[in-house]
Image (tube, rainbow, N blue to C red; front, side, top):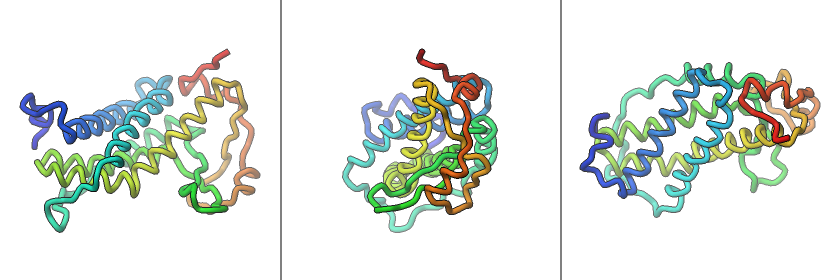
Length: 219
């Protein structure tokens, strides 16, 4: 299925696969545009909105019965498109709030938080979604839905949820006039405990990042 036929008028807009594909393509296009940095003042709130909408799509996939691919082995979609440029653009756009701490499994007791990067997460999400979109555009609709559902549970769903939580927290810090702690010098290849994270955190007032990231106090 080519780009020209992806949104063909012959397709039923009420079809589940069409709705899922439209939502996913919309997220990819919007995220790529934000990464260009043309409107840095709206980057954070815009991505908060886009991730919220994407997770609604993920919820629909998660609530759907298990989707079984038609073939035993996944057909080759070719090499995944490079996302390094998108990753680097978001890293620059979100500095100094790119790094945040996350607990991967909230049901695993006493699990220490680990440092993550919003820029890495967005690039990983786009990679997963593009992979399924390649199947969809090739006419392998069931394969695309299977991949999106499987990777929603295994990767892009948890990653998007964590990233949304980080962005929501950032917006809340600014709107509620609360100081924001920066993970000064923290890197994502370190395995740090909660105490170490606290020791590494430096104090950064929310107003210092409100302007560049397009956030304003609610007062």
